[in-house]
Image 1 (tube, each protein chain N blue to C red):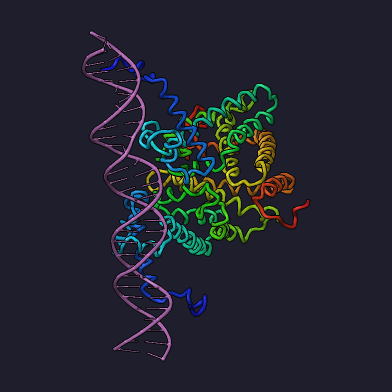
Image 2: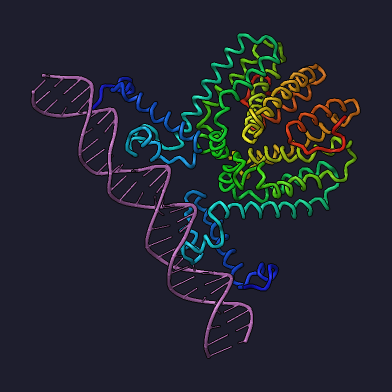
Length: 236
Length: 236
DNA sequence: AGTAAAATTTGAACACGTTCAGAAATAGAC
DNA sequence: GTCTATTTCTGAACGTGTTCAAATTTTACT
């Protein structure tokens, strides 16, 4: 039948990967130009010089193309944020970089992102924000914020929730970005800076020893809600 | 041509409103049974004993039917929350009531709600969460939380943001509800109770005179982001 | 009752996303 | 070079949401 799974996973034709790219590039160009809904699979196939069916050979469907874009955004965010972290010394700089780089990547794709957000609420959908299907993508996204606060001296319990909270903030800012129609998304940029300043202050207050009981309460809420995995300090 | 606008607004046929109801009820029954996507407009029309086109005479499209359900949820929430407010004395009781009644209304429609959430991210969509098209619905929804805290003695600035913050919390809980697969949505119920307790505590801290500068900063962020309308205390 | 206008209903038609049976092109073995 | 299996590609076909011109029913008025 076939040699083995590993060998079979490698594309036999070098042209294959190129064709896939061609379809993806054509699709994204059309999405940006006319929007997701106004771009038909027939348009995409024609633009890539192929028949309709060929597009479905490379992508399971229209949403899968959007999914490929999403994966690109995450990977690019990782790369750019890390590069920025090399230069940025203070926590403020690192948090700003983590958020601004994300907007940098998506700044030309507001319409596309709006369409992507459609699938967020449905846990069973492969492109949901919190569902099991996008678990890996989410992990990578949270990891960026883990790295952003990596050098900080923080109590254990804060270390445990901080990345999740920052990721949530980041999702909120993304949502704001979707609705932002100010030139060059200046309002989103300002919101990021203001939000980061607020986070810095909140950190100062939240890490006071006095606040330990409050932190424990928040942790317990999140754990009961299964929003946070179990951990050592669970039975306190 | 016709008498006048007022007379014309009244349905000529009493049967008309009944037919509309019939379509809506059939649609919702099918949505609950098979889900939104698996239910076709042809199914709905057939179930209501009509031809396909008739369904489009009463509803602009499939999404409009979902929109009608959404409007029902809001109205029902208003009614139930107010009834509960009559009985509930403490702020804790009132906030709990405001949130629990909402879940009560939607508890059989998780799948439908997931489909509704699809449109939330797109500002141009009539069913978006924050867009101009759903402004009125949103106002009604925020109003419930205004009423929940109506009797409280609160500083002006807190009064200004509190309903918006509570509404945001409520949206977050809704999102959690969408993903909750615990029996009888017990996790969502627990989260509501815990979140309300947290809000009560947060209120206690946030209303301290000491916290006034912090409150002003938050207010300024929200105003700069246009998430809050301008007001008297804007130039402080 | 008769008539015209309006409201309601019909079902064919359109463009879309997706599927699929098979055709064409290519790779690998001999 | 020939043959076979695999990859790649084609385009017709299906079911969908939506539109629309036309048919039918009801209302309003004389």
